[in-house]
Length: 404
Image (cartoon, rainbow, N blue to C red; front, side):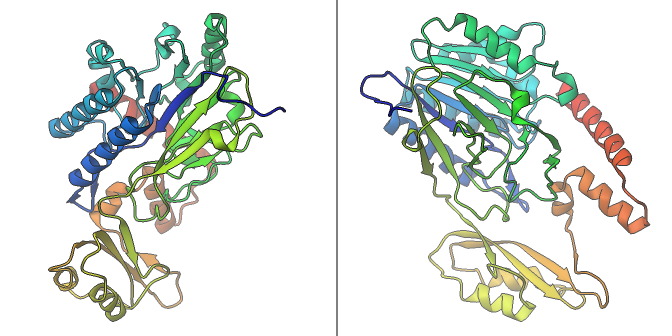
């Protein structure tokens, strides 16, 4: 394949981001300052690079019922991002953490600022999922939906409709929020190749053909899905929401030339790392430490380095009653904050058991809790039981979204 000359082709420049999880708190610590810092960096990146398309691929909020303050934070951020590049088209889709109906409420007034908020799957009006970036390209924007509610061939139907209208042979981008088979789900608790974050994995072939770039959300670790075309990508979250996400966080800047110029070349995809206001730090960096060793590590942590800190501690029985107070006292006068003490209790003759706090329990996927309970009761959690449990969870989630 001959090299592509970017001097002779008008490319579509995309800033791809996802999984902001606005409103997320870390073990009851308010992370608003960190999220506002991230949003300011996002606007600065837009100002510096002047993309044609700003693509936010789901999980804008951390919950389907964000507070008024969190919704205001998003509104102000989108206005700032728009002002940083007024000609840019912004496409924002709902993820599995979002309420699709909340995305739709202000859909019409948002369009005055060139912002397209797409929250719910509309099988009867497929054109509502197609956004034209004038003179630059096309976007097929699909929000999260339970797989059983997506008609067979729906993604291909949308791509075919774009192909009929794309007389100028402009780039075609598709956005989806899902788990694609073969992804690296590092950082997601109790994930498997079959299910990550409550979303069953699908083969990339199920998402159709005819796009030049598939912009994915849901998986927090930035990566390409290997197809040989270098055009299917999770951009990852720009800010860590879990201590297990011990990797850089970033947004993806993608230059796409005319339609069907694949595979994309390495210099067409640029990773822009974002520096978190308070990085998430685990002590020790691997494994566990005794209680006294953990306190020593915390005591020696530099006073001038901002961080949220988790201690991984192994105990023979239980932590001291005043453990958190004792540890927190060691951070006084420092720029770091103690978030959590992750205690692992060693029981003779048994595997190590993690003692979960209420906050951790709430953060777990429901199916993970179900498996733990079944194991404690000596019940085999087989495939049929898992399928029935997922069905119930999906029904509950849909009812919550409908009532949002």
